[in-house]
Image (cartoon, rainbow, N blue to C red):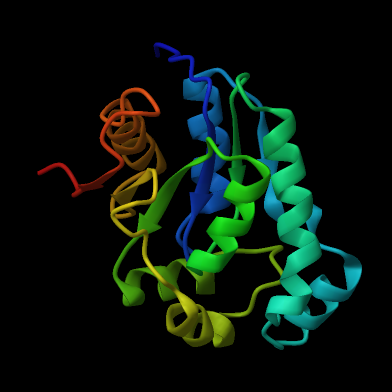
Length: 185
């Protein structure tokens, strides 16, 4: 498998259960850059709330987003991949304020598929009961945001290949900013 180098920091975003923690490391390996798991940036109070089934507030998320933004800033020009739900435009704006050249890979998919995947995963603190709040909060990438949407149907390798291809379509930071990718038929 050929590695592709990127100077970008890529934020793999989407609702819980879309595969951010699966696709993120695969994408980082394909791009030849380090991977960071956004859940590792959460303070213990946030993890406790989510484990209890309580959605986080914007105030809860600020220090978390700032920590991710600081990591992304430190990787500017070097590249990296970090998974982060980044559900709201304001969250993505906060990340871009710290690291202006980040690009987003928005993992998208059918709610039933995502719920099924969540129900079968082990060792994660996000219960399926919070999926409705995640979808209610989600604000998809807008045309002026550097990033791509990638469908999560198929295997992790297929999803990663679609993400790499879509990111390749972004070109330089001055190139096209938003593309949507559908699953290969």
